[in-house]
Image (cartoon, rainbow, N blue to C red; front, side):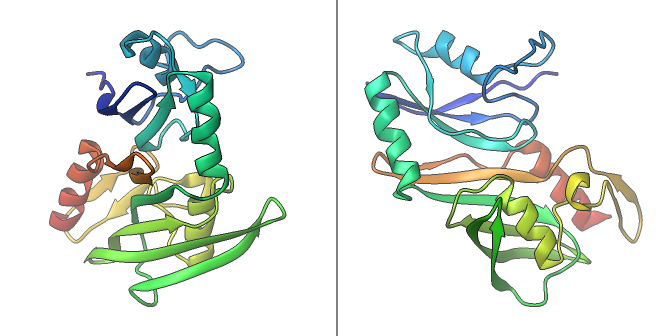
Amino acid sequence: MKEFPLILFENADYLAVSKPAGWLSIPPREPKPEVPVLSHWMREQSSTQTAFVIHRLDRFTSGVMLFAKTEGAQKEGTRWFETRIVKKIYHFLASPLPSRPALQIKTAVDGKSALTLFEVIEKSGNAFYGKASPLTGRFHQIREHAKVAGFPLLGDKAYAGLISFQGHHATLAIPRVCLHAYSLETPLGKIVAPLAEDLATLWKEIKNA
């Protein structure tokens, strides 16, 4: 059953939604009719029938995304991200356990300095549910930094993440990268997308495995 986006916030200039995993943020270079595109859906839902992209999420990352309804709002919203006014929090599932419950990773990503703060929210066996706060906005920053820290995200085979999890009683398939854009703290206020249902269910299964 196909999951659809959920509108989290709307005013005259901006629209924020919770993007399901599997949806593209913007159209691909080569059209793929079978793959849903969030920007197309946004234009259908917006009262102004326009939706300008301010930032993006990977196809298989779920969570909050902010769109603008006008070019002026897009320019302003983009400035918020570029000047780091926006504070981003991601939730994720990973394995194995980190050496300590909170740590920061600083590296160069694409030749530019990148910094991410990680924190354990809950542990179960050799896996954990965590929070990541990227203080910079580099490509695949959280995914790369999780690997550097020694706990690649579950399902993230591009960064050495497990595609199945072996519990005490069961082996669980990991269907996608376990990364969710949980919140954006912006001049509009804090916008929260509760953890995607598939990840919440998977975490419960891991705790019972």
